[in-house]
Length: 116
Length: 97
Image 1 (cartoon, each protein chain N blue to C red):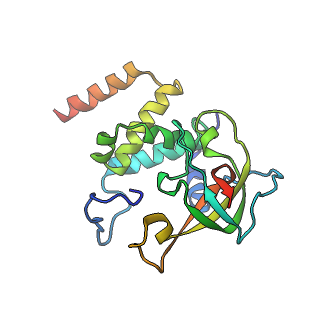
Image 2: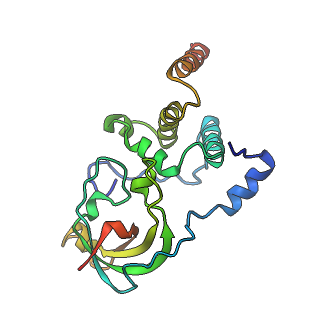
């Protein structure tokens, strides 16, 4: 087992660590692409919020390759894939009475998205 | 809460401390140490928090979620067993009495 020494703890917490995976996985989308969040309802872990399922958004930024929480949470491997910052308008998510000026930017994995 | 209504206003504290009690500070340190040692993956830990029964989740604090999930994950990982945990809580409760 790895050991975290007290002397190393402060520098670790100040600099943090990245969960980025060094794997050559081509992204399915590019900035500006329109996408729809999949309507999946897994019994296990997922980082796709319920309130986004079936909603349409736009790729804002490609973050790079990360492990998929849905498999990692259950010891089923990293499933490396691209993660994106995706923009959803407040009205798309919460309806016509929501602010017309606000948007939600949220990080979503390739497996959560379909092209429109 | 994901756009859910009915939870009341957010209680924004002025000059909110990083920790509200010393045990929260220890909880944070314990989490980081166990994570850095590779005992669990953060996704696994999040899932343990999600498995807290909804009524318990809504009536416990942020770091209590960590504590409940930590106990379950550590038992699952064989770091200690349910009897150890019960004995430890017995000591805590005796101290409190």
